[in-house]
Length: 97
Image (cartoon, rainbow, N blue to C red; front, side, top):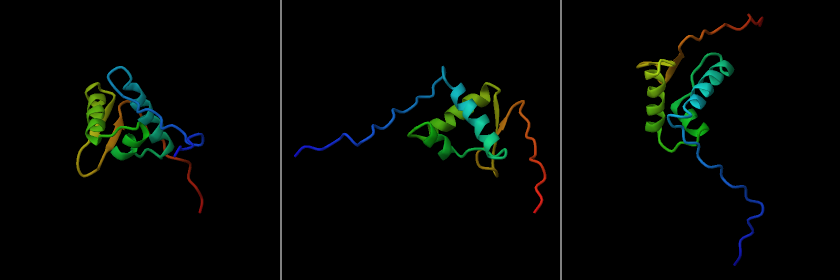
């Protein structure tokens, strides 16, 4: 029996974030924090965005950015709190309720 595959969309290949293109991760972190009121993405958010199968690899990449001096990782009690070195958060205008 033949399967009709014309309506199936191929899964996008995984993006391998290595030493050469780790700046993609940095750009993602900066943009995520901009769009989410300064909050950091979770390890799972990063893993899913870049189609990475291992959370330990995400941790490795984050520590690589930290050793490069681009981010600062806060430890317990804040899970995955990422500070962009040299960045600053500007509070939104006061909203009247």
